[in-house]
Length: 263
Image 1 (cartoon, rainbow, N blue to C red):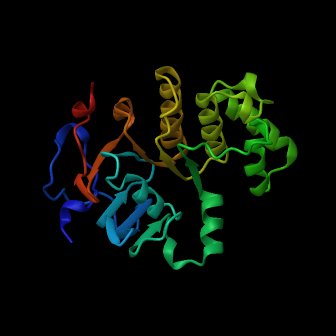
Image 2: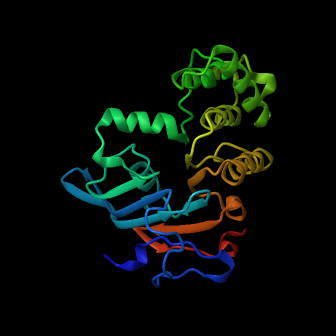
C-alpha cells in the first residue's frame, strides 16, 4: 500500500495539500486514539463490485479534531463507519483506545460503542415517542446513571445547544435544525472519549453550526475527546486541528490547507 494514505499530523499552516508521504508520526506506537491499517471495503451494485475504500491507513491522536472532506461517493461515510465499529471492513484492522475493534465479538463492540463513543448522524435517529429530554435520558439510563442525574444532565446538555425551551417537545414539534441539536446533545451527554460525526451541521444555520463546533472543540480540548468528522461544510475547516481529504476511496491529503475551503 502507498504511504500517501497514512494520516499523520503536523501543523496545518506548514503543509499544503499533497499526495507525498507525510512526516513520521509524532505519537509513540500504541498511543493513537484511532489506528486503522489497510482498510478496504467493497459493495455490490448489480453485477458489479464497487471498491469504496482502497487500503486506507488512519492515525488520529487523542484530543484531535480531524475533518474528513471529499466529494459525494468518495468513501467518507464508509471510512467513518469502519473505524467506529458500525461496519466491518473487508480487510484491515482498527485499534481504538487500545482495543482491536474487529477482533471483538459483536456484543463487545456494542458495549465499547456505548461506553466510549458518541455518534452524530445526518438522519438524527430520534425516537418519535420521546421528548428531547427523554432522548438523552434513555442513553444515560444504559450508562446506569440515576434518575435525578439523568434528568439534570439532559437539561444541562440541551441548554448547551440552546434548546432549554424544547425539553418536553417530541420530534414532530421540532424543526430539522432542532432535531439535529437534540441528536448532538444526546451524543455529547455521556462525555464520550470518541466522537464520530457525519455532516453534523448539515441542517443548521451558521449561528447554530458555530455553537455545535465550539461544543465539539470544548469536548476535545477540555475533556480530551477525539473528534472524527466527515463533512462537505467548508465553514468547519477553521475548527479543525487537521483536514484530511479523500477521493475515490484514497486519501489525497493528510493535512490539507484550510484556506482552500474558504468561500
